[in-house]
Length: 373
Image (cartoon, rainbow, N blue to C red; front, side):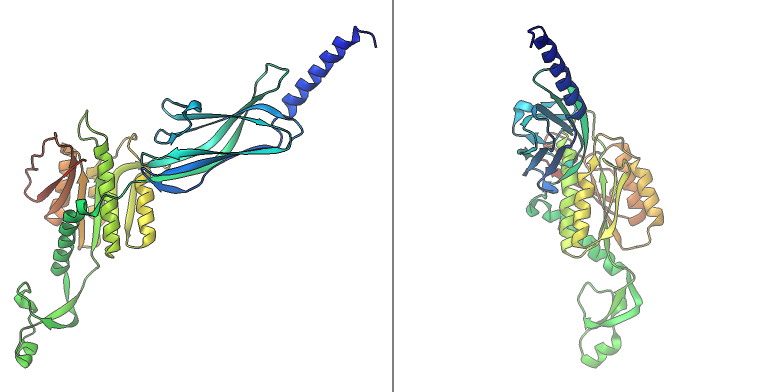
């Protein structure tokens, strides 16, 4: 073979390799991402598994796989992680033909939220060409990071007060036309409930027991409006944790709980709301709804939300609990709307130790400060 043909052959081989790589490099190339858990509680850890499969005759000596997720997850291997307005992760693989590589990334979850990965970017180049080839792969993996529950000792006084409100409304809304039985008289019983015939027959004071017009419910009203221009963002997270902790304890006691809030759902963009329920599945619904509240989105007017809810309320024995670190005019007006309907309202207000703790002027509002720790 003449020596002059060697460069020509090498050039043709180079062009052929370049053509084949560009045409077939991503064929049957699969990238799958998946969290090992569907949900964790803030502060816990999980892991993200990357599986890259090359069912192809072309080896991929340098393959870069990148993906993005929202700020709030911390990947242990920070050498390939950059943080801007999102968390960007880039991993480098080297795959032979017809091979698979599985890699596990530890993930710390310090912040409540809903995190999804919808796509990955992949790029590759061969040894002989400076050209870089790009492609995308769709992903459908997500992770709920639930708000953590507060120690019961911190919310016990609030629980006692809420349960007391439920008992009070239960007494107020007995149905005098539905007789259930007779029991002994106690000093708190109204005189109108005394059964005089049973009293005369037994020689001891007896009262009638009636059923109730409707079952008791508690509606947790969560305001995620910022309290002021400069504030500790953890106060809003405290509000969400209080809401979840109360819901969990109330459901354990069999009391139906619903949720009203001006927070927006991160996925749908709609205002979050939950109807009343008292099952274990309802606890999960609460956890997911609160995890998906996006504090960066614009908030709806809480006064309008409460007004619409009060107008269509069909249970007179519903007790409202207002949770808001903000004491701005809008929050006070929303609370007073509830007072106009029910006459009294428990307001739980998370604050820092240096914040003003002056009570609300309306005596119908029982303002309870919750100090951030």
